[in-house]
Amino acid sequence: KQEVTQIPAALSVPEGENLVLNCSFTDSAIYNLQWFRQDPGKGLTSLLLIQSSQREQTSGRLNASLDKSSGRSTLYIAASQPGDSATYLCAVKRGYGQNFVFGPGTRLSVLP
Amino acid sequence: EAGVVQSPRYKIIEKKQPVAFWCNPISGHNTLYWYRQNLGQGPELLIRYENEEAVDDSQLPKDRFSAERLKGVDSTLKIQPAELGDSAVYLCASSSGVEWDKYTDTQYFGPGTRLTVL
Image (cartoon, rainbow over the protein chains, first blue to last red):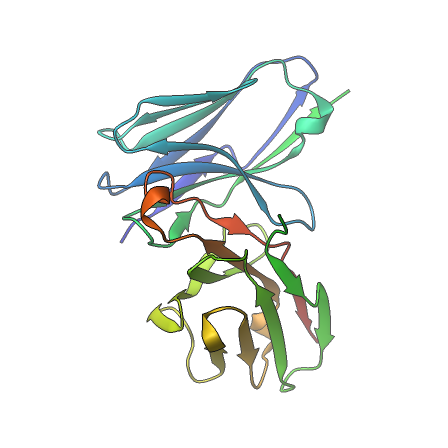
């Protein structure tokens, strides 16, 4: 059974810092991995999706990497802003059309 | 394009009462998912539909939970009777399930229904 963990559970940083969020998964046989953002009381917003054949994806200040062999993914946020404050979840999918298995999330606070 | 719509957004009920949640997926999306998210945790799948068929309901507590997706569009998730431990956010998501989207297979999530059982 796939298990996904995220470290740290919570993180507080001053504005402008670069930061890294970590995601680990136990079964390397994945179809894709996705990073989501969740604001309080809201649903999930997709940030980046990495297919199993890819090593990284970039969108603006966000960069996500994937190392299937070690069961790890990282989300790098450059020049953090207060608006980045949210919970960040990673999720892996076993196959096309399958459900996601989510990690518990990292709650990020960026202080002005 | 409208996103995934869920209602109600919030529901407070007494234990042992019934409750129902409604989801309208993105138009044309064949696959629909119901997830439950407990406080401080990631969402966990309850049931997945391909059109009208429930293809994965292994995590659905069938003694009290039921779901339906009539005509392969809207879906309703019901709990009867509700227990204190059912307090959570219930998220609906949909994906297109068509060949051209196989590369991304993106799921789009609704805002969720926050259930509080007293």
